[in-house]
Amino acid sequence: MDITDRVAVITGAGSGIGRALAVRMIDRGARHVVATDLDAANAEETAAMIGAKATGRALDVSDESAIEALVADVEANIGGIDIFVSNAGYGQSGGLELSTEDWQKMMTVHTWSHLSAARAVIPGMISRGGGYLLSTASAAGLLTQIDSGPYAVSKHAAVAFAEWVSINYAEQGVGASVLCPQAVKTNIMENALKRSGAELPSEEERAKRRNSNQASQDGVLEPEDVADACISAIIDERFLVLPHPEVETYFQRKANDYDRWLNGMRRFKAKLKGG
Image (cartoon, rainbow, N blue to C red; front, side, top):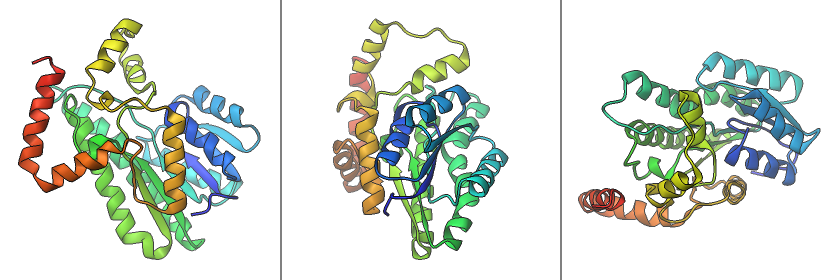
């Protein structure tokens, strides 16, 4: 899909990958980018970095009616949405000890928000001849996330939903890509800590976490590099966006011998814990 003269909406664009994507979209000729974020000030900061071709809006992606209202407003006042990027997300460690509400919240942000966006934009895209959806999942959506059950499950669901969209709407001109990176330099964990009221870690503690972090083993990418990979995938209409090429190898190993892969992940877990 050609990005030139397109209108794009990006959620979670107040920082990190979302902000980098907003900048790159304009660099590649987009007509206008609507940068949204749960934090209105961060969204407006992203828009201010870009200038007149960007607008910053507050958006809680867990609120389907808010997504519908945003889409209606953008299409009425800026133009038909050609590209919708469902990028908002957050991190939370834990598993069975987490409440059902915690699991449901992560599903809402990481999966149901993609459904809400698709419902809101796909009919208009079809009526205008086509469009594109890019959703941010994670390598955890193809593999797993050892230290977070709800993150692993919600990201798997995000990949599955993107697959379903791609299969069912390609013939009507709507493309889909799903981003599945490993570690990227973002403030996703810090944002989660701020929401919970917990104390932010020291730089020493951050370094220790990076060294023992499952996603960091193959390097930590800059958001701009990930954004470039996304832009390339949209232009080429390629489904999987894998900024860390190692993920494809791991995914193939998983598919070729599931039990062997599970045993390998158990050993990897023990290694991360120093066992």
